[in-house]
Amino acid sequence: MTHIDFWLTIGLAAAGTYLLRLTGMLAGARQSDGESRVNRIFEPVGPALIAAFLWVELIPAHTLPNWPLLVLQVIALSAALWIKHRTRNLGIALLAGLLVYAALLLLRGA
Image: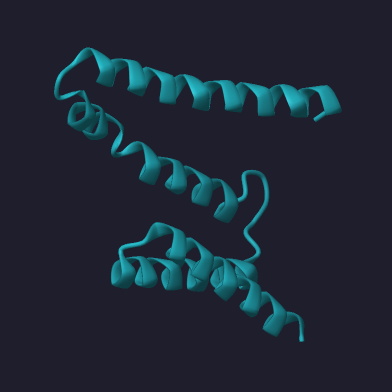
């Protein structure tokens, strides 16, 4: 990927994100119950994006998985899901999962 391709990809992703948000705002403004309707429409988008990112990160496309690293990632994911279940806060769960993963990488390297 060249430097131009990289920035083009970033720009397209940013434009797509902006258009999704703009569409939701415009649809909500046109209807009296737009807020609840838009929330129902876009509710599965967040978990679907997280699942897509996890799939790309955990399952390599053209090589065999690095099994020890995959185990660490699954442990960190499990910790994040457990904390999400306990706190009902996705931000705290994400931070906790990242911290668990970083700690596991440090322990593995030591």
